Length: 401
Image 1 (cartoon, rainbow, N blue to C red):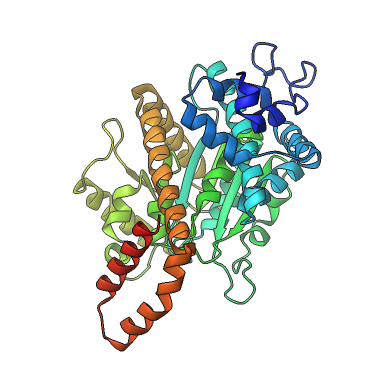
Image 2 (image 1 turned 45 degrees about the vertical axis):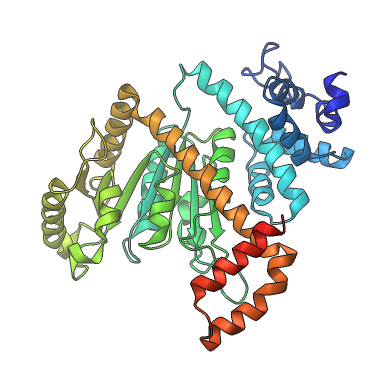
């Protein structure tokens, strides 16, 4: 029995027109066709269970869906901003069918990126930087200044600004894109504000997948800005190559204002607004954090976190800061730690998605939904403890499988 009879949906996927044309993209060679048929061949080399799961996940694509995915992919790797925006919207959707289509698109982009990395000597083609800090630290101003500097040097910069969501409309509250007026008009930059949609910390699976899409579109610098100081930092640190913490001078109780765990994650601490009357407080904060970092456990064998001062208003210290970032990247690449860090991050996000989907499956299970209202009432009345109610629901879930 041939593979097409065993996996009919893969046959439909393989029937899509090849996106690989020799004239349009130099990376597309006859030996490496980045198309749906390559995915079919790749899946056939894996275990039967993986093939079955992949086949079931993508199911059969209609002609309209095939044309849509081909158009998005062609536009994406061609550097079209509109195609990138539409692709990110596709991965952000909660519609089950569109989520399947998004995974098919991501597989194609991943295959394209892997081929690029092979041609780059096995090194990543893009560098990911996570930016965070308390409100008022000047994150948006800093991103605009460094973004304009990088585009002026020939880089393509994408900014994924994770924004708190309105409880009323679900839209973004802060409007980071409107505050980066110069960078938003730069054709070598792409800014994507993403509402948190109620997610704790604001960094969801779509943020991680949006990074993949931005890299596929040719953006070699990806900046991820998170919400405030808290849970989001731990999430974004698991998807970037370098985590940068921005802190303002004269912020009150300086060292206690930022949690120790967040400082431990930082590869670079940036004291912002170091100009005018704030130069002296900025120097004091720089000295305090430099001393504090010496007491913390190192997370890298080749890099010691540094503390620098910059001014987004005057631009002072920004070129030197980027030189420090490049020094970090070179040290991590030469030691192999960057590759290990990315591999570890992939495992972390695998289990994050498993937990997310397992919880959703548990909540939507008919037996759990039937027992949940009664147990919630008993918990609120104090008849049983939340722990016992959880154990009962899990028992119902496991016995009903």
